[in-house]
Structures are given as structure tokens and as C-alpha cells.
Length: 455
Image 1 (cartoon, one colour):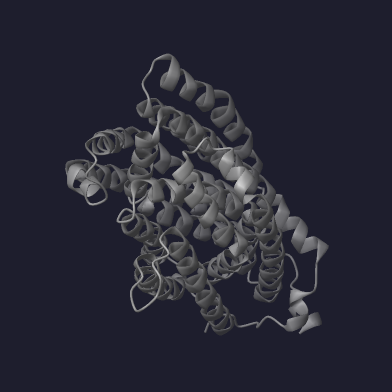
Image 2 (spheres, one colour):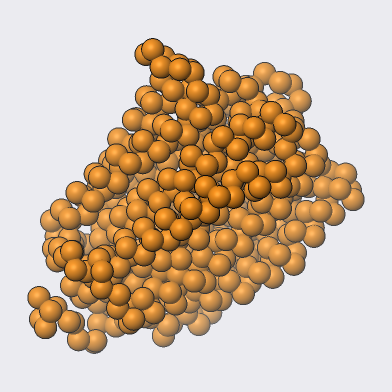
């Protein structure tokens, strides 16, 4: 396959959208199937998953930076160096994932006890988290390989692998959660093992796919070669990205603690509403990722004006489609929530959150575009600085004030998160408009390639 294919935002967006949709379908399938066990099972998986997301974001220190660096090298025509960075990414992601797996095996129970859960929910959470967390290194390798394949311009191929992983996951869920086919009914534990098995299969297929799409194949020695130059460029982007992402999800964990203090009904409502709200921002995520890949190519190829114009076109589409999707989901919110539960208090709270998500998701749509394109241009530190100000010093105190002082409950949490998304989104929009990201490229087309000397 040709790694230098011409890329368009539209042709990148739809397969990334479908891949993200499939990823979240895995989570929704767990929620839907586990709701047949109990609302406590759903809450247990929701709380445990919050820590899994934080672990994946820490793993993303390498992965997120590498996607930007590989994109810029491909844009500058240096595909030999891009393949070496891809090998370094896979190795570093695997090592980081193994460390995180060990930590989960050791700390799962203390982490769950920290979350103020009721006894039954706590028992299920401490069953689920060591299994999912103990094999988190599989997801770290998947993230590396999927990112590489997309950045090379083959998002459809990554989407096909994700489709297969999801079909396998749902099939094994059916067998292990409810005990079909002569197998024991494992409930939450079955959902965990189903995820592990499907991820293991996906790793094998992703490796095969990566070797097919790269014109300069990764050599075995490349996995063990640690270039200070490449690693430095990756970390220059990866550390700020990971810091911002971990900060965001750490704040979400604090909000989760607020919700747990409100009660079990609020905790389950949050999980159901979040599962549905996820589908609102799928297009924004996909289009933002696709636009960032194009921006990286333009910046690496010394075409900042093309990058600037492309982002504004994407911005108009992302905002309009987010509003349309959100309004559609608001119209059918009651039957959607009733797919998961018939508890009237949970239905009332969850549908209220879906209505409030119109304020949250429109602000989030700005962040899902302008933050990744600024990173792709090499301007990653700026997003971190304002993330700290908005998330830590504004949204957390505001959330506590609205939730407990004004006694708004779960609605207070939602509105505080919405305020943060809008504040950061507007700040990032003006940063892109200012053009101060120009000149921050990690590589340019004028730099010599090392392919001739090392091939």
C-alpha cells in the first residue's frame, strides 16, 4: 500500500466516526447487557471505567505525541523516519501499558474503596477493575497501532478491525454475562473477560494491518532503538497532551465523587446519560481528529495558510451537526433511557441531563476541533495552561457550589462541566485565529531525510 496517499477531511472523518462509534458501542453493549443484571452493576462498571480512561490517557503520553510527529514527517515526505517513530511508539506504549497493568493489579481495591460506593456496587467494581486494568497493556498497543494506521491515511482499515473486535466482544458478552452455551453466568466478571479477549484478538489483526500499509516496513531492531531526537519530539507534544487529558479526567473523577455523594440513583443516571451523550460528540471527535491529521500534514509540508483555512471549514460543520444531533436525541430521550432502566427516578434524572447536554456538547464541539489542531501544529503547551485555569480553578469550585450550596444536585455537575467546555473552546478558537501557532512545527520539508543512509 502507498503511505503517501492524498488525504481529505471528509474521507478521513467517516471511517474515524464509525471506528469511534464502534468503540463506544462496546461500552454501551456492556451497559445495556449489565442493566439486565442490576443498576448496581452498571454503576460499578461506570466507576471502574473512569480509572481505566485515566490510565489510557497516561499511556497516551507517547501515542498522542507520536500521531502529531508522524503526521508532520509524512507531510514533509520523510516516510522512512515516520516508520521508525511508529516502532518507537509501539514499544513505549507497551512498556507504559505493562506498568499501568501492574498498578491496577495492586491498587484496584483501594481505588474503589476511595469512591464511597455502597457495598454491593463496591464488590462488583473490585471484581471488574483488576481484570480490565490488569490487561490494559493490550489497549495501549491497540491505541498505538490504530493511531499509526489512521495517520498514514487508512482510517477505513482501522475501522474494520474495530468492527470485528466489537462483534466478538458482544458475542462473548452474551455467553459470559448471562451464562449461555453451558458457561457459568459471570455478570460483571464476564463483561471484563469479554473485553480482554476481544482486545487480544484486535492486537494481532492491527499488527498485520500496520505492516501492510507502510512502504518502509518496521524492522525488529527498530522496536529496540530509542532515538533521543524522535523521543524528544514525541514528548514535546505528548506530555502536554497527556497532562491536559489526565487533568480533565481527574476533574471528572472529582465530579464522579460529587455524584456518588448525591446517591445511587444519581450515579446510575449519570452513567446512562453519559452513554447516550457520547453519541452526540462522536462526529466532532472524528472530524476534529481528521482535521488534525490534515493540519499536521500541511504544517510539516510548510503550508500553514492551507491549514488555517481548512480548520474554519471544519468548525462550521462540527458546530451545526452537533446541534442537530443533540436536538434529535433530546426529542427521543425518554424511550432511550427506558431501554436501560424502568426506575422512574433514574429516568427523570437521566433525561434531565440529556436536555442540559445541549449546553455542554455545543461547547465541547469547539474543544474537540481547536485543541487537536493546535496540537497538530505543535502548539500543545497553550492548551494545557488554559486547561488548568478552566478545569481546576473554575469548573471544580463551580460544580461544588451549584451541586451542594445551591442544591442543584446532578444538574449542577452538568452545568459546571458545560461552563468549562465553553470557556476553553472560546479561548482555543481565538488562539487559532491569532496565528500564534505558526512557526511551531516539529519538522519541515527542507530537513534532509535519513532514509538513504540507513536503508
